[in-house]
Image 1 (cartoon, rainbow, N blue to C red):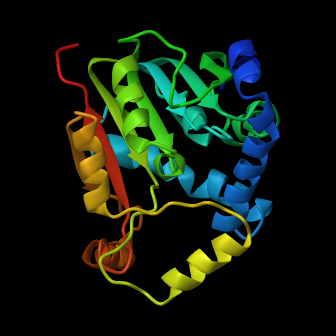
Image 2: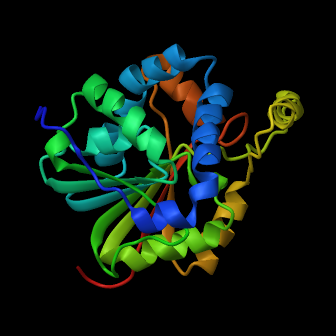
Length: 256
């Protein structure tokens, strides 16, 4: 792929507005990795081996055709931007995160690991509650394990809707949705997160339906199953019961 360095835009307005939160945002990003994965090595393994399965799943099983301009919000290391940059009909990918440090330090490592088409990618600090983009600008807004971190999910969804073109789509994956069956490990996990100082929020599928409804963004829920063979059929049966893995696909009303 194109080894030209991806562009980085120093968003001075964002830096001035959130100067006191910069290091906090960086620490939150590091803590997200630490709580979801045992260490950075395990995270990088998932970035290289597991996460790249998502875009083929979304295109083949969910019927999505990524094209045009794509915005990734809460991008962090921007693995999703890296994968989408390799889609032939995608012409531009903008990766936005609240932490300039993560975009500067982590993202380039991920781009090299995934052989991203970096000429298509622009990195820029920003707040997904108040995006610095015009109305009707992007064909897709995407995010991975991001919405549940928002202080106001409805506001984030409304902002995504605002910057989407009519007919454009929001695609949210890897949100930690509570399964129907309450497992004992749930309380232990919450206690561990509290002890480490992580303010994680977890919602049910019904909660997300309400968030999208309040944002006036019609959406579909797709069950995510990246397994193969016998394990595929087991996951198909228990998804939503013992675990809950979904893709949320919202579509802005109107014609492109």
